[in-house]
Length: 365
Image: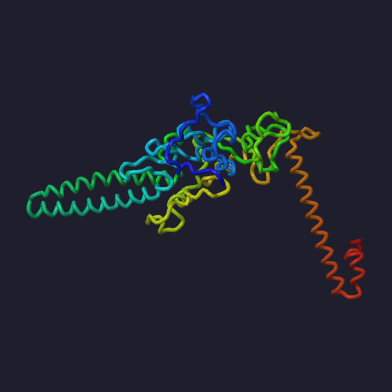
């Protein structure tokens, strides 16, 4: 797919200028024709089934990078670009802690805390033994003991808080509003769920700027390979659409193999964004949002139309589908009885003709 990864840009883009020399507004473009191919990045969004968006259905716009943000991205002013799943900027490791380094950061703080605890125990024994034998204190050992305790508490606290974020599939930035944040997601509407009347939620069609046959011909038409219509849905306050459950959250960051949990030899599985559904794997919250909107697999949304008896059209279709299934089951049973009688014809010899015509009780089969 065309477009560049936002994390690979080297800094904020220079705002475009008009013919009069004034800078253009740094707002999100209304169509893909309004921006260059390297800055639109829209095909990274609407080729997925789910992506985070603004209230109008467009991806979240970064006014500093002048680009659309990927899912769960935050602009880092220290590095001058948007970073996926950014946790914080750490001066101790000299870089951004994000999806590509959060696993290594957790392993670093955990092993460092174990070392500090080991150092604390060993030096405490040495200091106590020296005090007992000579009744003196070694200032260097005391300083080592103090630093072991200080950094042990610091790294142990960082390890526990980072592990909590791993199990919840969140970050330090996302955790600031974890209990009140409402996620706005654009969810692809299946083709068999398209409505003839406006649905009970807002929708947006991609690519942006598409001109239908009944629209204004003065607008520039964009060549369309495949139109994709999305429903704009909102989560409940405090819900996390990326929460997969504690163990799956842990494996998405730490890895699928047990030795990946302890050794910094592979990147986190969540750094792979080539999945079809979304840039990050979605959890039960998104499935519940789909079901509430009537967008679950095999379920057509209620379109508001009523049949002649005043009952919802969806219930009428369900009854019709049930009758079709009952008829198919009855046909299958009839064919099974015919095969059983045909077997009796061959096994009973001369009496088989009478059985095949009248059955066991004289009823025509």
